Amino acid sequence: MQLNHTRLLNNLTQLAQFGKVETGVNRLSFTSEDRAARQWLVEQMREAGLDAEIDGIGNVYGRTRGVDTAVLIGSHTDSVPKGGWLDGAMGVLYGLEVARTRNESNTLPGLGVDVISFADEEGTYRALAGSLSFCGELSDVDIKDAKNMHGVSLTHALTEAGYAGQPRARIDPSRHLAYFEGHIEQGPRLEVEGQKIGLVTAIVGIRRSRITCTGQADHAGTTPMHLRKDAGAVLIRLCAELLNRFANAGSELSVWNLGHIVFEPGAGNVVPSLAQVLVEFRDPRPEVLDRLEAEINAAVAEFHGQQGVSIEVAHLLSIAPADMDAALVDTIEAATRQQAVPALRMPSGAGHDAMVLSRYVPTAMLFIPSIGGRSHDVAEDTSAEDICLGADILADTVALLARQKGLA
Ligand SMILES: [Zn+2]
Image (cartoon, rainbow, N blue to C red; front, top):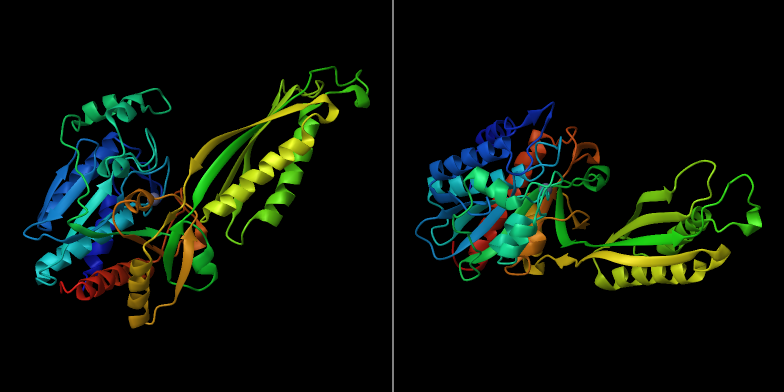
């Protein structure tokens, strides 16, 4: 399969015109820019010979005609506010280019290439809404409850867009041999290590906890130090302890972030009565996540009651890690070896639609380098050469898989 690189790059540039802002895109889910991009995409899919529709949640789904078996390739075309032009969009257009090339060249007669752009991956209303819906994990109640930060409901957005009432497309494990998602790395590892393709072994699990220290507000000038119930001072010491504990208990792949801290009442002359921190941590292995959570509990137990400050912890979020399909990762690796392309096995530190799909069909992701590791910003970029190389590796992977399965 010989992809048309010029067409792929032109399509990427065209898609980036919808919601273009500086060198990036502002294409929040179900805005007019996002809807126009979806309309453009459904037309592109039809031109490529696919049966394509926009479904009841906004997924753009194109199916190959006349086959019983297909690979599914996709990602998302919505963006974060002032996001980059490649995040998600590239993975969708990889699918479009592979499908179009297959249909034009009459290769792989026994294996179709279905293409999908999942709605609202970035969570303007509900993170991963499109892939959850596609896998049957998004109920009508979930849709009814979802709102954006301005209080606009997802139901309203879907109605405005004209998607409400359309049937919702579903994954078909008897048809879909595999799901592939090509994506920019969104981090610096490939570039720093001189690698061209990231072979994603797993998508990390994410946990988030909120630690709340409660003391007593007093005059910061008149209250002697030893008589204060200083929630702020206790929290700061606890945070320092936590950073040490995480460094000891984490794996070499663990990351953590003390992302938000509040002191109340929040004045220079008042002893803080309340201090709160949000702790988030990620790792591809559930047992490591358990270990890190245990460290939080142990640190809280150690500091609870110091200086008359009580401490509570709430574990707010737990997203399980998702392993990619080992055989598919091997197949992508074989495709990189064929072309002597340097590739690195690595986990994904960011969430992707692939984590949902992996629960239903064999799933794999490939990463290409992000310049300077930048993403979720208009500065996000990747060289044309690397974009095309990633697409070629994906096409080769599909061809290899077809041969492995006797469908070539
Ligand atoms: Zn993305």
